[in-house]
Length: 405
Image (cartoon, rainbow, N blue to C red):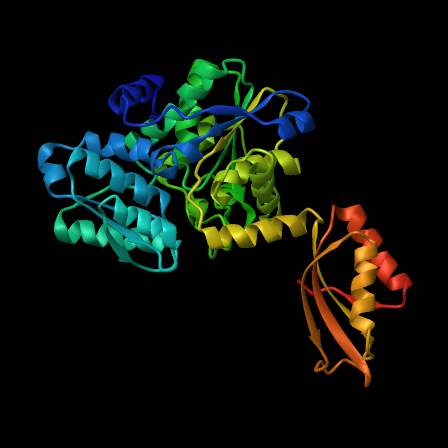
């Protein structure tokens, strides 16, 4: 495509949204500001209605349907955030909604989508699989497909995020946001570049689901053969044609972050920012913390969503602590004599580490006769404290092993 959206398109979308969406806060981040040497702000779309920015684009798209189209109902495909945005928007506009979700979509997102009034169908293991099923449903029933990212109205709605950022922080030099299909990044780039041509706009993908880097290199959308990431909200196997055109022409760069980077970012946002954010919503912060994005402040990082399964959050906290050097899992081999376990735990206590759990076993084939293995999970104060603890145990003659993963 040759034509891109304009600032006027995004401003018109904002007028249409009216007071439907919340003007989400722009919160300062002290840890990131200290790390980057200047102001860093967090655009908290995790506090948006339905838990993410997605309601913006969904509402604009459905509101612009004709009464006859709305009467046929709408259908969408999503891992959760777009699903909730479509369900909420359709309910506000009086349209019936059906949402196709991947098998294994987070239970809270499924429940919330149902709560907004949508009918749920499960199809495939990825958003791309669900999108195929949604297209088939649209062709069979006449329902209007509300694409999660590859439509001008959707992109215009998402671009209203940038209008709010620049009104609150006109001095911003770089905006960093997560990137899946590209609707949010495209919309932000359209509005931000029109209002401030020298601003930098950077997209961030999870390394295990990064379709944009090879696509940009090839000059056209390229489909990934497989994906693996905790950031289900941006796990999109192929860019859309419309979003790819916007990203390739307007965006200053696309970077990737690891699962460990994302875990650290989630932990920091929870501990220091008191913000609950889902993995896809935290990749912008992960890119700043890891150094994947080199930016001079002022910087705004968009927290695109906060819909996270509590069970996943528990695992991510543990993973984030481990990635930050504050949570250790290891095994210790020692003699099978009375008092050995107490002596081992006393050594750990002496180093002021906190034992979370202990598993004592004699049935490992690699153990010698008269040996036992103790598997431990231990909290520490950081990498230096962890090294000191392990060094002290080995100095006392204990054999310490770490899991291969």
